[in-house]
Length: 290
Image (tube, rainbow, N blue to C red; front, side, top):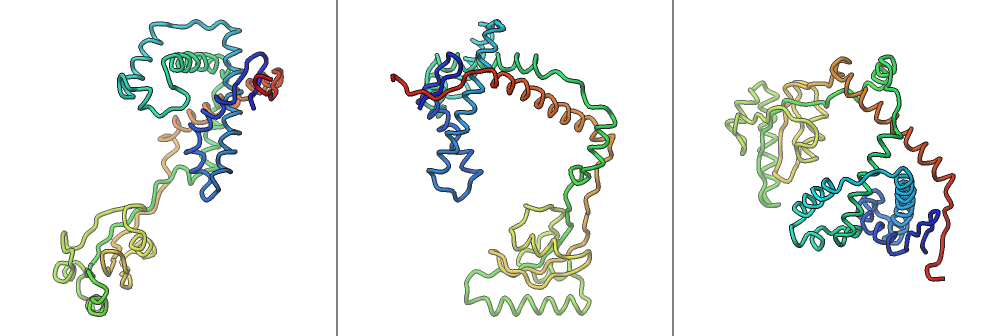
């Protein structure tokens, strides 16, 4: 079913095109949902987006924003070059841009939207006090990540039948560590990955395979793990240092916070402006060719 926004008709094929373009990203936010449910959600978002675009296009037309033909031509050439040259429209895989007319319309629409956004999102920037309050109330946002400096001793296990002997070997090494032998020396002597005496350097989360990471981050400084099984074999892990995150100083992040808060405020101002236009608009579902 098509939608009419004032005197502008949004045909059902345009809504479906937009939904196709949105489908993949919306599906990522709805894991496990049936395809039909994701499609309905995509259609709803597509309708809202096209209604907003139609209203903004009408307001831009009312304001008679100029079209910079030279800039449109440059942007057209840039887009075609970035999307495969003469075969750009076939290769871009963008359901909303299928030919030169679609591209021109999209470029002009985006430029007019930017002009409208600039005019209607003007607002005062946050005060220093507001910026500082935001920083103080959300300390976790300004902390880095916990990192570890660790070493490991690895005994590889190529086949399942090797498990008993590999486990026995790694436990013998663990006993030698408990008795006071140096971890690095044992890594050099006994590990199947003896490079740098088993020293892995400093790393954060997401750098190691999950089982290794979980075991390593559960250790305190100086502590050695029980044998840890990964796809590589069995490991003993020693954490030399834990580097806990410290919040960045306010002055270091002040401009970043100011920019974020100002942009958020501008978004709110523009959303209110757009809501006002939508309340004044006549928006109705229609059956095409009825």
